[in-house]
Amino acid sequence: MKILTVIGARPQFIKAASFSELFRKNNTEILVHTGQHYDFEMSELLFSELKLPKPDYNLNVGSRNHGEQIAKMLEEIEKILYIEKPQGVLLYGDTNSTLAGALAASKLNIPIFHIEAGLRSYNKKMPEEQNRIITDHLSSLLFCPTQTAVDNLKREGLSEGVIYTGDIMYDAILRNMKISQEKYSFNKGIEEIIYNSLKRSDCLFKEDDYYLATIHRAENTDDRVKLKKIIESFDKMNKIVVMPIHPRTRNILDKMNIKTQNIIFVKPVGYLLMLYLISKSCMVITDSGGVQKEAFLLNKPCTTLRDETEWVETLKNNWNALCSIKQKTIIDLVQRDTRHLKISEKSVFGNGNTTEIIVNSIIKYGGNSK
Ligand code: UDP
Image 1 (cartoon, rainbow, N blue to C red):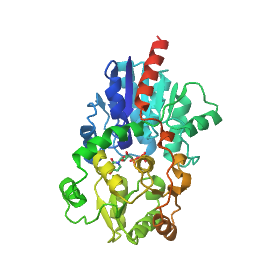
Image 2 (cartoon, rainbow, N blue to C red; image 1 turned 30 degrees about the horizontal axis):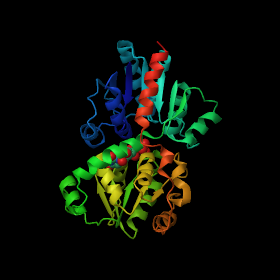
Image 3 (cartoon, rainbow, N blue to C red; image 1 turned 135 degrees about the vertical axis):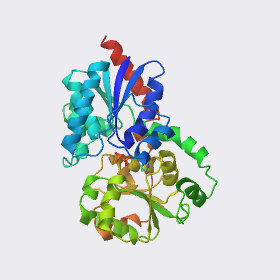
Image 4 (cartoon, rainbow, N blue to C red; image 1 turned 120 degrees about the horizontal axis):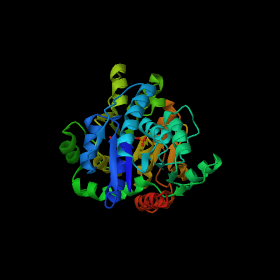
């Protein structure tokens, strides 16, 4: 079978690695990288670390306004679809690359296979929510990471082609945690790891004695008052906050010129180091979807700086706490006593065989449509 996959952003590279390896054993995959994320740490580093195949096409669209970015991708993907004539287009998640791929494929009546279908925040102001609703409604196969996602789709009248698969990120964690452990051999001191990996000697923090934070959602970064509150609360925490910083957040913070003492800002780290840093932290603070789940799957409590989450399974027993952007609330929730919290079963995200289920379903679909 021949499919064409569109990816363009960091979490998509992480999810794509295990699928590409398995699917390509007996099938053809054409890989299109839109260039939505283009910094070395957000793209090339992950491609080499995860041994992702080299893209067949690189669109280099870069940062632009939403409409312009999607339009540019749409135009280029359509041209490639005419050349490659795939039997299906595979899309991941909810980025502008996902939406452009969905629009291009559906206009040419090419079936769409959507990994991470059915997620909803029920906040239509989020660009991600707009992208995922449209993509789901244009898809032929909708691979749902959770039962909640299946139920969400049912409420929107979608049941044909909907398949509960578990979460492909769980597969990614199981696959890469071992490699991360070998690479950062867990008995080394964390200072040594950080010094060797990031070439920074000023990062003094101890295992289990720091918060790991990531902030990049438009709702937090585009509102400077909110971003200032977040950074100021991190600066008043009882433990160091280690923050691999997304380029979008970096650009805005650079203009705001806030002085901090308790935050260690580092460039975006590779996925293997990210898994290590999560697993050695005492709590994760984030607005990322993927990082919330990684905290849960690596047994770390989490505070999510958003009003809602698509990953409601992680909220049970307050393991992951949603947090509004008020300084006192952030500090109180992050510093809450988590010692007696009970974590839910990991199986809400599947059994770690999601990639296999997805690959088999796509091949079966290809066979049936011949
Ligand atoms: N991630 C990473 N390095 C970093 C920050 C995040 O490898 O410095 C990984 C993280 O472990 C997760 C993914 O990137 O697997 C999440 O991506 P992001 O937060 O950009 O997007 P979201 O999940 O919110 O769509």
